[in-house]
Each structure stands twice: as structure tokens, then as C-alpha cells.
Length: 282
Image 1 (cartoon, rainbow, N blue to C red):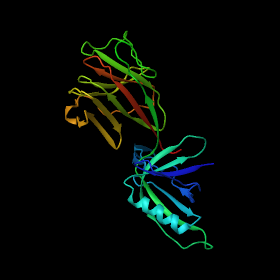
Image 2 (image 1 turned 60 degrees about the vertical axis):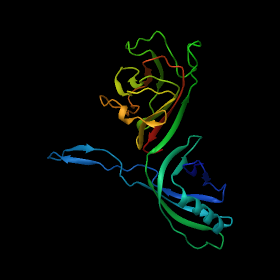
Image 3 (image 1 turned 90 degrees about the vertical axis):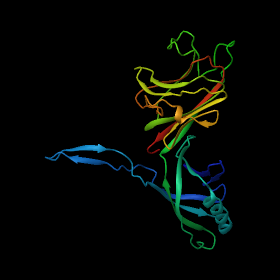
Image 4 (image 1 turned 135 degrees about the vertical axis):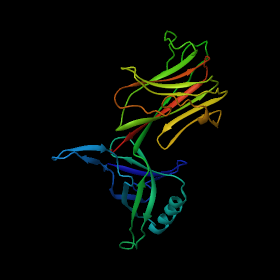
């Protein structure tokens, strides 16, 4: 049985499957709609100019309120209209949950049906595709241990440029319908780090983020489509990023890739990464 939930940016969540006397009913807009454009090249032939989704794709539904319908509705609305961020969670089958940031357009309030049931039409504009975060967490031990725990590994036989004295890496597998975004946090000291994404099979370099400043405590990297940034020790490091290559890269669909952190000095910190897989429809 499919399930729906809605949560705010802090993680507070309403179950919409009757657990809290609220149901999400009659949903539409769960598929995909393209805004394709074509060039007429005559004689009945057309060349595609671009393929993208409509900017204002919406999820339209009804909310059904049962026990103490007016009271539950008021509590739900007070939370909904004050939330700074809204995320609809969709579990079509099995245990996989998919997330989509939305903005509420409207909720219409009606009278009780048969004196008990309240049904309110609603609409939400989609701000992202569906996505499924998959977190890779690691603990990187000191030099005496000589290695990190799986899935990140350190290999002393690898040869990097002479300027790099440290390197951590992990292989990432493609998934979804859109190149995946990457968030990564390194806690510890790192000297003028470089984050590189290369194809595991072809060796193609898909992106390189060279940061011309050292961190004493932390490095945070994000290539989220709506929130790309780099911070060093909690401060914006955008002015220190080399413009020579694409710094905010995404995991391609074509092949597995190796994600590496390189440093001009040995690294002994800890790191974790989250990969955000995006889907047109689930």
C-alpha cells in the first residue's frame, strides 16, 4: 500500500495515512510532464532544442480529516502555514521513500460531510524532482592505522601528483534519472584541498573543485542543484575556488565514478558524504 508523509525543514512530520487522523487522497501530479521545444527543419522533420520539465509542476490532492476533524484540521494548518520548508515524502511500495520539496499553493476548507468527515482540496508547487538521499559514513583513523574503514579506502600504492601528500576516495554508483548531487563533510585539518570526480571505467574527469585555502577544522562541500557551496572552518570559501574547471559537479548516469579528496599534506580527519539521487517520477 502506498504511503504519504509531509515534513518541515526541522524534521517534524505528519503521517498522511490515517495514523494522525489525516489522509492524503486522490493525488495527481506524481508523474512527469516535459516542456519540450523543437526547431522546424522542413518537410515534416523537427530537431529537439531542449528537453526539460515544466517549471510549475504541481501535486494536487485532497486531505481527509476524520476523528475531531475541525480540531485536527486547525492543528495541521497552524503547522503547515508556519513551516519554513515543506517536503512531501512518497512511499509507492516496499520500504523506499522519495522526497520532494514543495511550496503550498492553497488548501480549501469545506463543511463536514455527514457531520463527521472533512475533505479539503489542496495544491503544492514542486521545487525539486523526487530525490532519495543515500548516506556514506566513514571514520578515518590516524596514520598509525594506515587505513580508513569501508567504504572509503586509502591506498598507498596510488600515485598522485607530487604536490599531493594525502588522498581519500570512494567509488559511487549512478542511479536515478538526473545526475546525482553530492554533499561531503571533512572534519580535521586539510591543506589547500581538491575534490575530484573521475569515471571509474573511462578515467574521464567530470569535475574538479580546487580550494586555494587551508582548513584547520572542517571542509564542507555541496553540489545540490539549489544550494551549491563550499565552506572552510564554517566560512564561505567561494572566493578561494579555482575557476579553471567545473567546481560543482554531479555524478553522471553513464558510469560509476571515483570521488577523491586530495591535500597538500597528510590528512588524518574524518569524512562523510551524502549522495542525492533524483528521479523524474517514481
